[in-house]
Image 1 (tube, rainbow, N blue to C red):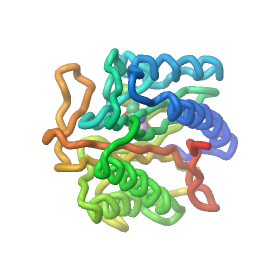
Image 2: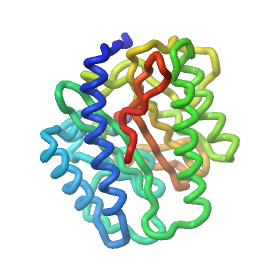
Image 3: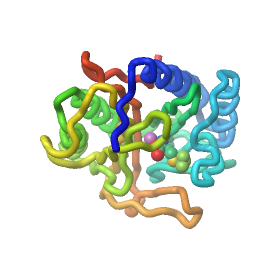
Image 4: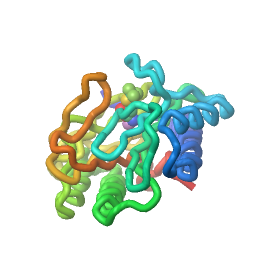
Amino acid sequence: MVILKLPNEIEKARGSNRIVAEVLSKLRDKVKPGVTTRELDKFAEEIAEKRGAKPAFKGYRGYPYSLCTSVNEQVVHGMPSERVLVEGDIIGIDFGVYHNGFFGDATITLPVGKVNEKALRLMQVTEQSLYAGIEQARVGNRLGDISASVQGKVEAAGFSVVRDFVGHGIGKNLHEDPQIPNFGKKGRGVELKTGMILAIEPMVNEGGYRVKVLPDGWTVITEDGSLSAHFEHSVAITDNGPEILSKLN
Ligand code: MF3
Ligand code: CO
């Protein structure tokens, strides 16, 4: 069941996502060679606490950290650790909070120092595919318009979209209906309505779309070991078009 949000609820979700965006924005300056993913996690947690927000992922289905930090061939749900980032890595940082009764959720992928041309293009295309999807988040469109738009952008660039993980509705729960695949057909699926909040999150592989989960039960990696990038925004559908609630400054 898709839950529509009232304007005062969207305002609360705006607040939660503003905290998420602030944290991700600050993390952009922290990500450099020599830093550990655990340090990034601590940093995010501290800011969230200062803002009176609860990290959304910590404790979710037993997940032990505040951030998901997915490096290189890790697609999503990489766990913060003593791993030291090195020049040339790329890192997907996924963060969510619960604040004032509403969840916020967003992801960016960042280069560590200087990265190669292909990694750069993978990140750019993934972010562009997110914006192509967001552009379709309009009243009267259908979910498939978002999915097809993301997929089109990615595949035109020669990359592939992950099938096994999807975006989601978000609100009083971290994950609500509808599920938002990053592949699909225009004109199909549920009709988009004012008051929906959608977490759109393309996961894009340089090689094949197949992924596998490591024995830790969380870390998802590409089956072929190729690089993967991930971007996510929480987006409200309004009468005036899509509003990106988690927009970074
Ligand atoms: N942003 C991701 C999602 O929307 C991360 C949540 S997974 C968690 O599903 F378990 F680590 F919380
Ligand atoms: Co999400």
